[in-house]
Picture (cartoon, rainbow, N blue to C red):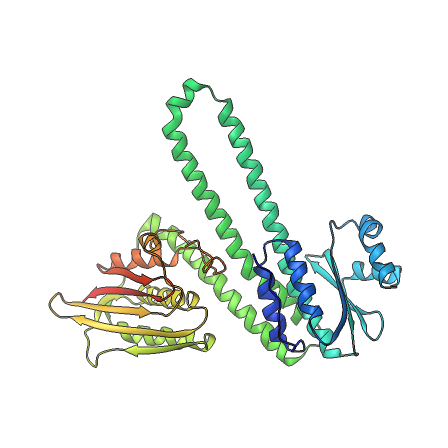
Length: 409
């Protein structure tokens, strides 16, 4: 992945750090993350010098012997002062323009960030400290992901060894069954990896911003930013948990329906009203006829379907644009069609064939950083079909997508 740096000079704005955090999440290695951070900070006019150390382990004696000693000598720092810093996990000012911030997560020291500034700027100190809280969560999450991948590779090697040791006679008899188990195991592994990763991401955000709110002195703008991020991450986490619970319940008990006559256009407007304040880059428009019939459906489940379609339209049009809600009526077949159109990433024909499959996620560079479990559209299809309706997708890659629900009236 090509490395990126920030070109804006407004380092005293929290928005600068938020973009840098986003870029850090997109990197593929600790080395790339470190390079991004160093290059981005050194490009700032308020920074004279910067050094980032990602520690190889948390054994302080060994760390000081191998890594931090040279760091202390190079910048003429106090050995005991730095050691106290790594034990107390608190940012500190060595002098009026020398700042040191610990990279800490779950009470584990992950690294140190040393910065020399041109002036004694208290606001800059607080912003960098807040950034380090979030950055430490990204570093920790990256290390956890790598460990998980390592465990999976070792597990696959063990399975392969067991497979090769099997006799040829048993291999032929068990080949079909083995292939089924391999496919099931791959699905299970992918599910566990996806669920654990997607659940960890909002948890990291919640934990990181909670640490900011625990400080005694914090600017109002950071309090507002932290609370909004926690609320957004909490809502995302709640939706994923609800999807998993609902999927399990539907598989074991079926959909429990409470059918009544509903205004699907009104449901669409209610969902837009709840989502639009948090998605100001998108322009929501409505194309509804003056008079259209009510449809038969379950209010709670139908609202969830509409919400899933709108959330997808928002996620898969990350650069903003218009999201149009449209209703058409087919009096001949007594159908009401409710459509959601976006101007986003779109899909290939191959992706469209699988888009309603459970846990399916499109795998291309445009979608790899978009969060989700791949359950929303699958659940939506199950719900609509349980209500004797249908759902379909029309899309063009890099031009946008349209999802249409058809319900009888």
